Length: 212
Image (cartoon, rainbow, N blue to C red; front, side, top):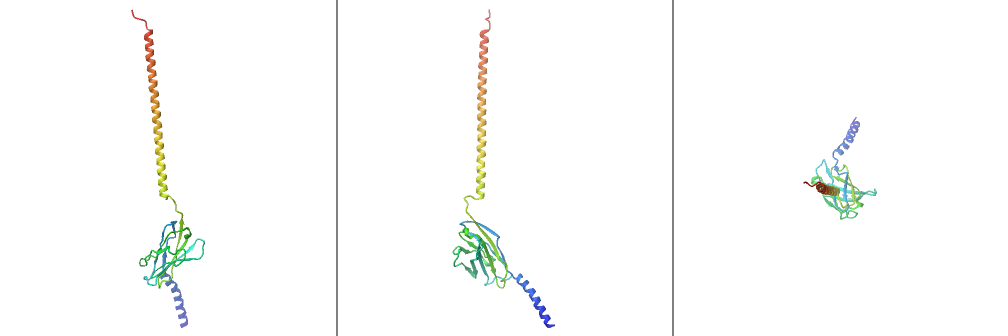
């Protein structure tokens, strides 16, 4: 009977432990994807929530996996204070940009290159919360362009407006020229008509018989 009780207690404890670990897990939050321009700097945001108060043993681990799916590379480590990577592609190119008291463990990547395309992972442990999710953020580095989309749109609208103004001005000038030409033709026709009438009256006067 006592053996059955002990077995039951162990079974109940075994069911409760995963639930306890799940409740005490650290939840990590990151954006799914970040797009940055080649040669610029980019903040990779990572925040967390923990069921326990922030302890002195809180640790943050940032890793990187290139797009070619090669092995993970260390990016940054935090334990009591920030620790920059001693070697690797991110040496002298990554700085701490978080505040653990505000549950922010973000980092800043400087002078981005196309080789930085890949997935960054952010993992946080806060003893006794040592289990939890791992945040993943995909970074895409694009080539720098001369004009932004807004600038390009403004230039396109401006060019269209200038072209429209030119077309309207040409139409107005053509209409004015046609009107002046028509007025000149009308004046010439009127002058010719008056001259013909004057000539006709003169001829009629010359042809009329003299009075006695």
